[in-house]
Length: 547
Image 1 (spheres, rainbow, N blue to C red):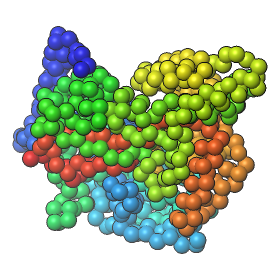
Image 2: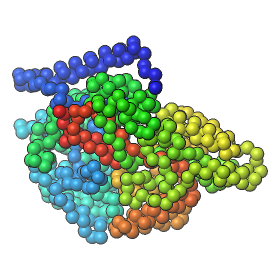
Image 3: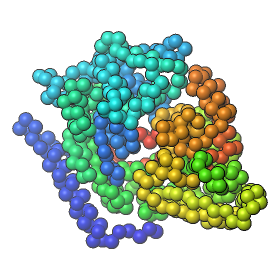
Image 4: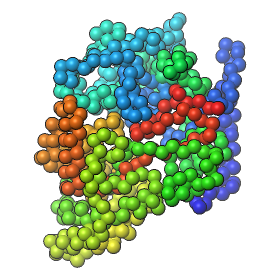
């Protein structure tokens, strides 16, 4: 069992947490027009975000921490359900014409922005197609410098035909485009509020979502309140959301978060951390006996592939430039053992290529299984080729994945490779990957939208970093030709076969080492109902309630 923090530290942090809760109570019971508003604990959903939220502006919803918060505050034209099917949101319907290049969206007439003084006497107004025209233009504005501008890179133009019709013309067919529009970057925002606050819109958000902004004390607390004018209803005609408020804390220590959850001070915990994984889960991935009556665990496919990447540019003497070494590493460690003992069976060994489970184009072709003798023979063949008796590599990672990389290090030494593990801060790791400074690096790719193109674009030769996501600088003419065909193919069955051919090329050429396909794991209190789970790990609270 993992040793817990000392009692003095724990109680100090608990004291801080209690102060935060009292602070939220004061916020919830503040006067509004002379009338006190009180909430029961069952009406407030509480979770912790150990990475501080940096912006509540959807144009900067780049990281999960920002995406989860903005998902409660904003809506786009479309949204994804838990099965990743595209569903209506502000757009009630749409049509696609001109061989997949012309999109026309018909908007609902009952969507209003959250109340704000800047809207005048009515304190709100209806959303129109011109609001989407403004919001999309803002994504492309160099002065705004949104990291989400790439979402519209395949768009020829967009415009509001009138208040209720918004049209988009693509440069060429791109079948994943509807799913792309579900990203929070594409949320609708009100021009008058954005232009009044400027950059401070990040901390003064006004959207259309099920919850509205109430209070943000950065690094301490974020409070959202129910939007009583929200447009969506449940199957029985009841207006969403059910909750009165959402309270988010920012305890950076994951073990402290776990203790607060176990004591019932948090309703939800979103991840598994090494500091407590053996306390709550067995090695088979099940809740241990003492928590079965207290905690609900949800587990499902996650569109996230964890991998080691090889930088294939630069120094020709680098051993990983040889396919012999790359394949040897892929054969040289036991993924199943790694998942069982280091991940408590959370995840699936990645033996089927780069595209993860959960996508319809998942490749069932077997890739690299654990074959140490074959791995050793490939290393020996390379040593003879370069006339060296010793071959070494360095794997660069951050501290969160040190245990995985040390496991791989031990396994690879058994096949004749000398392996070092270099631990650096996450920001330095990201920069090193982008600049081609790391011969072997640990990385992960979480889907931006539910289509395998999002994964395969990492290996298209025109996407070399720093101008694209091709961190490995992998280049293959056949792969590029298949990729260019696939992004124009509107027939799903044909496109999926092209995707699988590309994934097979990646298995053969081995520019990366897929480690495991991750799983979403969620822990919640027994009284939490309606909390779904989905392969992109989106948090949607509009149908959640507490008994």
